Image (tube, rainbow, N blue to C red; front, side):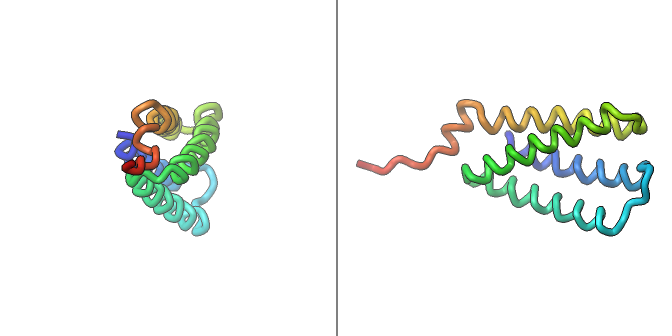
Length: 118
């Protein structure tokens, strides 16, 4: 369930970047476009690693999501167009929800290393 939400968050990130391109105050530079594509690819790779049960990638994903929470707060608290604020709010809710899903009881059991057969 968390990996599906991570894929959804990646898609929402792409929508957010496209909205920033169309509705943003400053011009969307080539650097911003390249970093947006790289970040989207990074989240897809992290999501696939988390799906395979890689605990280190779960920790890295959590750290990036926590940073994303603070990044999503900026458009919500500043004077941005309503659509950008709405997308940022959905991102915020998804990021918090994914962090919770990655660390609740069933997820912890999923990321435990397999027991050796003794």
